[in-house]
Amino acid sequence: MTISSSLTLTQVLDRPDVWRGDTLARAPLPGVPTGFAELDRELPGGGWPRGGLTEILPLCRGIGELSLLLPALARLSSDELAWIVCVAPPHPLHAPAFHESGLDLSRLLVASAPGRDATWACERALAADGVGAVVAWLPEVQTTSLRRLQLAAESSRTLLFVFRPAACASQSSPAPLRLALEGEGERLIVRLLKRRGGARSAPLPIVIQRPVRLSDALACPLPAASAARSLSQPAIA
Image 1 (cartoon, rainbow, N blue to C red):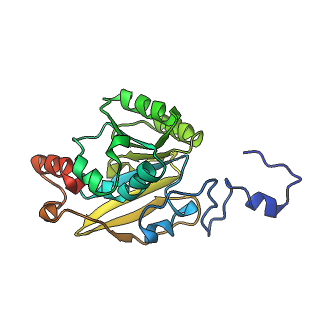
Image 2 (spheres, rainbow, N blue to C red; image 1 turned 45 degrees about the vertical axis):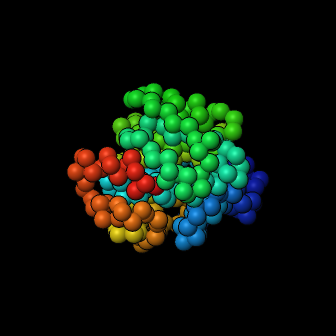
Image 3 (cartoon, rainbow, N blue to C red; image 1 turned 180 degrees about the horizontal axis):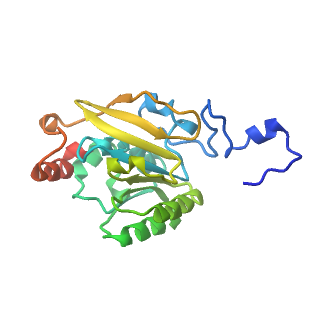
């Protein structure tokens, strides 16, 4: 970033790529509301950032991590008629849960891309017209690939969500927004590991919708069979 010496401090601070350490940054584009007011208040732009990488690190699979995204995905597919692209989900997604959340299933695409093909599929989706969000599961993605995805997202208005293991929290990442998630009953405990602006050290509890019949099967860690079942039925939503 190059800043002319003729600019005043006020002009510099008015740039969207410059922010104070004690306040939230001003997002270059309005965010997409998350569907959770308490989370929107903590995010620059008041929602999920368009044209940027959001990294989500759940403690384990099946704690309701996808439920955090469904309100925004539903808004994009129904109100903006945008495509939602899911890349390399670890288990079959459960269509009735998506439909119940308001997501238009006719606007949903799933790409079962293995290995490095998953990153390539994300880049292609980000470059395509009419894509509102890309949701990818990339447990072994390298930092260089994440950086390419961040750059690809910046050149678009698309939401980009990448799920990675919780152990990746200690690694550096080009993602402007990083969230760690834990499950606690009917709530998700969200920790904002990184955002543009002042840090938030306190965890943020968020109530999510879960199917009643699976609410008792979400303890972490899950046996392999239970994990697969919770991810292929509405509990992943």
